[in-house]
Image (cartoon, rainbow, N blue to C red; front, side):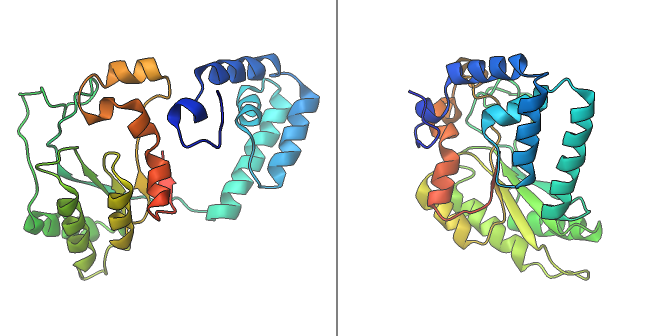
Length: 240
């Protein structure tokens, strides 16, 4: 049963609803009256439903597309200003117990050297990034409870924030690590992270399980429900 307010992956993600939404958008791709009403709603900056967003994405009316693009640009500027914010990825470790078929770090790959950075190495990397002008970073690490436990991630965050270099310090450390527990998300929040990022390669369960045949990431529900756990742990800025 489809329920967008549910905390269960099998309820807030419905394959049939996805297909129905795509069909709805296709059927209304030239429906000027509907598209205009959605544009007016978008101007209120209070969000759109997934079906409304799909209609705008499928719109084939060039004059309406011009309005959509202009409004999207204005809303972006209203929220973020006339700027682009960059962050530098900082890979702490490529040890991983998952078997993601698209990733060179997958557990069965015996052709790469595995590396876990020490705190001294992290300091040197952060200083090098600061010398390039970076103030924001994204911490990356493979999923490995032995080599990359949450304690290692927390220690690394503390190291990163402690570095005071000639042009200042890292202002924001975003974190991109595997789905974890509410308790661990709470620890990340207390460590002062910026955004918690977790890639969701696909919401199609069958395809997801084929792409992630082994390891903890194979669990579709655990991965897909991670953002709710992150927010339960106090993290108020998440990114898919």
